[in-house]
Length: 93
Image (cartoon, rainbow, N blue to C red; front, side, top):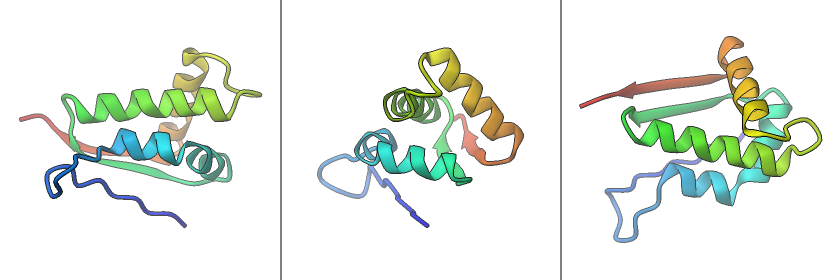
């Protein structure tokens, strides 16, 4: 099991969730294809959008046999959501 957190306001150099997704993209994709779950918590107006885009990118990069386009990545994310394996706890301020 892997848990990565990004507290962008708590450190000198800002590290965002999407940065961690890009760093760990191969592992994230492998975990998701092995039945893993992904949870996003935070700002829904920008952060959740950016994280979802980063996830789409790493899916295309590290799962090229099954996910060849942004549409394929979006379909995979919708499937994860339907299975309860991609959850968002986000809010808009």
